[in-house]
Length: 200
Length: 200
DNA sequence: TTTCTATCTTGACACCGTAAAGATTAATGT
DNA sequence: ACATTAATCTTTACGGTGTCAAGATAGAAA
Image (cartoon, rainbow over all chains, first blue to last red; front, side, top):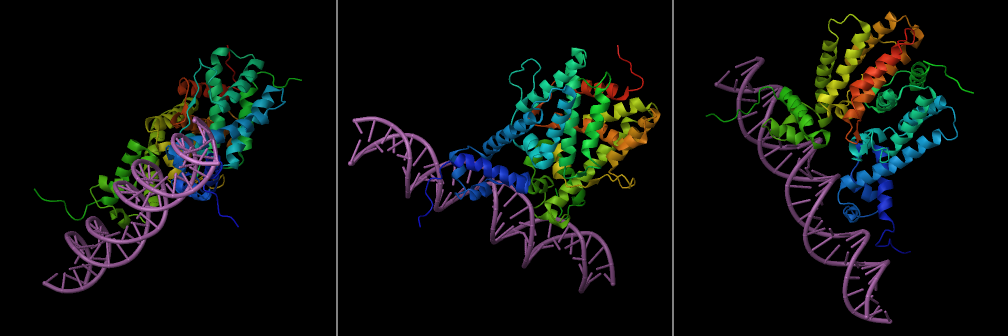
C-alpha cells in the first residue's frame, strides 16, 4: 500500500466543494478553515496556497453556489412561453432553492462577500440570478402593456417578495406559518390580474 | 480618586447594551464576548455569572432589540385611522428600522436565536412585531371586505415584501437600485386596488 | 460579627485565522 | 539527463476566541 501523495491534485476545487458541504452541514456558524482543510485530508495551512484568506475562500464558494442558483432559475423557465407562468415558476424556483439549502441564504447574502450590483444603466454586468429574474419580469410587464416608468419599482416589488419569502423560511428565528406556495400564488394572482390574465 | 469597585453594579444590562453597540459598530462578524466584557471594564469571564453561554447573551440582546423594533412599529401607526395609510406607514417603519441599523437584520434573524412563532391558532403568543403587523393588515383587509379565506396568504404576501426589501437593503452582497420607498409605494398601490382600480 | 452567597478575577485549555520557514514534488531549461 | 526553479504542502508559532475551574472580593443575611 502506498501512502497519500504529497500534492493533492486539485485542492482548490476540493476546498470549495468541501466548504460548501460544511455550510450545508453546520451552517455559517460551524464553518472553519481548519475543518475544510481536514475534510480534504490536508494540513490546516494548505489552503493559503490557493486563497489569501478565509474571506477569499468564502467568496469562491459564493460564486460557485451562485452558479448553481442561476442554473436552477434558468432551468425553471426553460420552454415556458407564457410570461405569467414563467414568473410564477421562476419565483417558486427562487424560493425552493433556499428551502432545499437553508444555510445558503445567510451565507450568500451576508457572509460570502460577493458583490451583486444592479445598476439600471449597465445592464451587462448585473448579477446573473437577478438578470434572469429581470428579463422574465420585463417580458411579463410588456405582455401586460404596463408603462415602462413603473418598470424598476414593479420589478423590485416582485423580487422583494420572493426574496422576502426566502428570507423568512430560512430564518432560524421565525417559524413560517402555512405554505409559502400559497402566499406566492396569491401574490402572483392579485398583482398580475389587473388586465386579462391568460394568453393562448 | 478611588479605584474601580470589585462589583460592577448592573453588569447584566451593561453587557446587553455594550453587545448591541458592538453589533452596530462591527456587525456580527466583529462580535466577541471578550470585547463586550472589555467594553464594560470587566474580566473576560465575568459574563459567565449572568449568561451560561455567548448564545444566551445574544438571545438577550435579540430580545432587547426586538422591543425597540416593536416600539418603532407601534409608534408609526399611532393615531392613524385610515387602514391603507396605516399599513403603508407600518411597512415604511419596518424597513426604515433596518435601514438605520443594517446589522440588526442578520443578527436578529440568523444569529440571535430568538424564537418567533406564528401559529394561526394561537394568536396570543405571536411574536410582538409580527402581531402589530398582523392586526394592522387585518384591519386593512376587513375595510376592503376581502374574503377571510385569503387572510393568511395575503398577510404573508405583504409581510414577505416588507421583509424582503429589508433583507435586500441590508445585504452586504447586494446594491439595491433606486429608492426602496418607490417600490414599497408601488406594491401598496397595486396590491390593494383590485376593486377600486385607479389606473390612468 | 460571622457566615453565606453572588459576583468578579485569574489561569488554563482547545480551537481558530494567519504568518514564516522548511520539505516535497512538479515543471522548466539546458 | 540533469540541474534549477516554482508551486504546493507541512510544521511550528502567535495572538485572539469561548469556556471551564479555582480562587478572591464584597454585599447580604444570620
